[in-house]
Length: 222
Image (cartoon, rainbow, N blue to C red):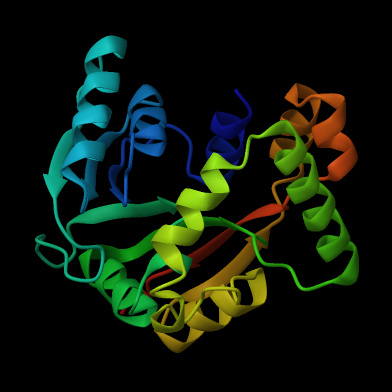
């Protein structure tokens, strides 16, 4: 699997890590790292998502520890984990700086943060055109239900989300630097984008996809 290859190439081989998946959702990353042989804990604000994660873990015969809690106020002791991961989370937070500081707090010295996100709100003209075409296609196909739910959920709170419409590799790298993480690196995840394009229909490939990326940062070894 392409995701496993990316993480295996980014981590020391043969070492079993204690991993925290923040905003685990349905458990995609938590289950992936468990399959790779690591000891994984997942945390999410949504009880419903945690139920889905537990259901997925049970179906796969895997064990992950699941907690209901806040990404910006973690219920774990200092220096508890080797790796903190999250996917599509930072732009949804009201206090992303507080969240990253919490992730750093629970990391052991030398521990790593992996944050996966995407250029969901890319302002470049070609992105506006693709987005407009996509919205038109969805309107004519009567498949805009997800967009309506998204707008209903996030439009009322968008002004309280610092990274809403500002999510980018550069901004997350700056956030990591400002919160004291070092050795920051950007992985454009070209393999994942290629894999996803190959699985999409011709119309989706024509309209284009938002590019995703992985930002990593390390807690200093004092």
